[in-house]
Image (tube, rainbow, N blue to C red; front, side, top):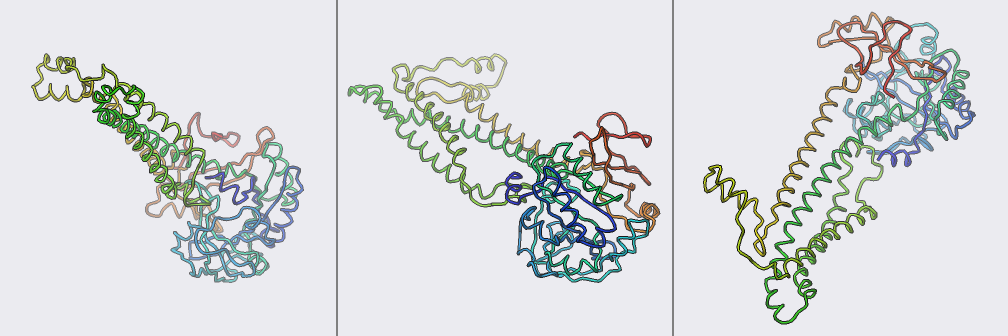
Length: 514
């Protein structure tokens, strides 16, 4: 699914985030940054979008991203449209919101989102030591015309799955001089993401942005790997269930084939008396079974095609670029041939036994299991039940005991495997600390004194822990690495430790698994 999503939407390989006075006061500065990064060796294309915060309530805001030069969301990093349409290129007041925003703000097509903005002067001042004045800029009214899915919205634990919207280039062109841009994002389509390449991109961004905040991360590290992990877990669960269910179903079919062949060969003694060869008698015995097999395979193929419209399921379906009925000729053809060969071979074996002289009814032999149960003092009803359940008998009285038991075991195993995988996935999703996310939310702190505001929030009911989380980039052996620092200000808040311990001094770090 993810590969199709990336190909269909021409997803960028690297994203550069820049925050500076120039970027905050003018979207055109982001275009210059994209042009500078496009000159780095290994960069094929660059697209830029500026993020404009809109204060929708006293406590909440969401970002409206707009590409001034239409270099992003059109030719690269295209968006998957779930409902409605994309904003018209010449309409500054139309937006398409992501599903997170639609759910959190209860938005539908045609709804209007309104609120004040930041001023360019206030944003620029905040990067040079001044206090951010808050949402005192012009108030905007934006109409929702579409609901979209971006790559950042695909994984369960993406840090970017927040309330966001996409505006047309007309948004930045119309409001860029009067509304402050808090962040500029540049996507890069590259021919590789080596450590040396990322260093070159970082150096070029630092030269253009100056001594302010920049971040350089690959798409894989920000949301691609998380999406693959989510889909891999889902695929494992579905694959385990499908494989075990298919095996159980095959065993059930095999159980039915032998009695069917035995029934079809009822007149075998007459056919032998008439002089029919054994091959001819086998054909007579297997004919009905082979016809049933053919009808079953055809019906199964039709059902598989019809059921393909229901897949993928869960989170994976959110990023499916082409939902609907699909016919995978190679996979279905391979499975069909293998299944037909197995069933035909089993039918031939059953007909061979049914048309042999030794295959005729003989006196039943004593049951070992039933005899052992009788010697252990089991009541007659239990002894008879054991014999009927576990003794195959011979000739036309033969029953497929071993395949029946094996089929039952496989069927129970399929159900248990799915339950265990589903419960494990739910447990991890319900306890984010298991994958390192030890907090419930990461609200932006735009107050004049962030630390004082955090201490004040720690006193609120239902707040078990609070801390300051900062992001930056550090270099290790010349390799730029995204870094985070967490300072607990109240309650218990600590990153989960897999090995070793947490840093205790300013010169220590703890590495992520990757």
